[in-house]
Every structure is written in C-alpha cells, then in structure tokens.
Image 1: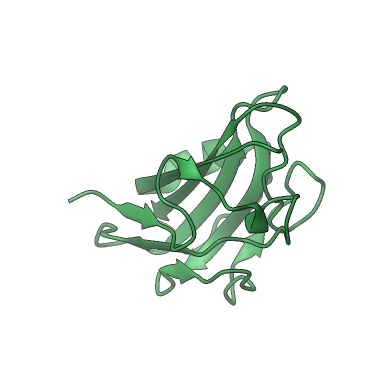
Image 2: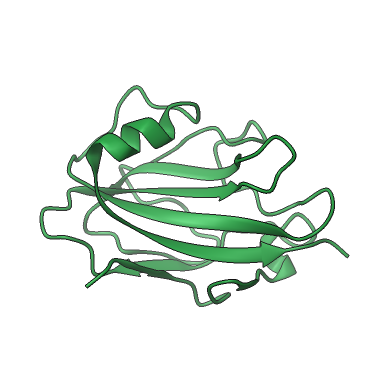
Length: 147
C-alpha cells in the first residue's frame, strides 16, 4: 500500500478554492495522510509551486511533525514540536497560491521520516535533508489561477 494524502477542501489535480489563496482568506487547507510505513518517527510537509517564474516557489514548509499527528485541520496552528520554516514570502507560515499569470500547480507533499527531528534545515536544504531521512511520501496537487 502506498502512503496517501488528501484534503477535504479540494481533490487531486482540481482547483484550490480561493479561500486558501491570496485572493481569499489565505488560510491553510485541511490535509490528512495515512498508510505511512511502520518506523515513521516524524513527518515533514511542503507546498511548492514549480510553475513560478523562478521555479519551485516555496509556499509552506513544516518539519518535525510528530508521528502521532496525521492531520492538519483548516487554518490550524501547527502541532506542538513542529517547526515552520521561512517560505518564499519571507514568513514562517502558510502562504497561499498567488500566481502572477496563468494556472499554476501546487504540490503539497508529506514525507514520513526515520528521525524524530531534523536540525540545521532551511528552505534551501529542505529537499536534500528530507530525502536523506524519507521512508515514503505522498503528494496532493491543486491548481489555481487568478481571475
């Protein structure tokens, strides 16, 4: 069985509602994951926009999500012990889709990790550090274009 990631707010490859973007309330969507491997000690979460003019614009990064946490409710505070890293907006929080033109894809990815804690990590080395400890991952893609 493969690790799964879903949202109550949008389906895979479907439009992200404006509420979760810069055109709405810019709050984080609901996310829930399951079917992660035995031995998972923590999770890391990212939301990236590879369609951005500079490529892979960082909208959200969270590390050290305890293994007991398998859901982030809409507009939630991060779980105790978890750490948000700087995003492309220069904030340590969720920054919703805000494409300059056209329809962009937003990749929400959760990684099951073999360690309780990632240290010395930032948006520049996130992918490398997470890959070193990843047991499995799941992805949910949302789309958005501004009117």
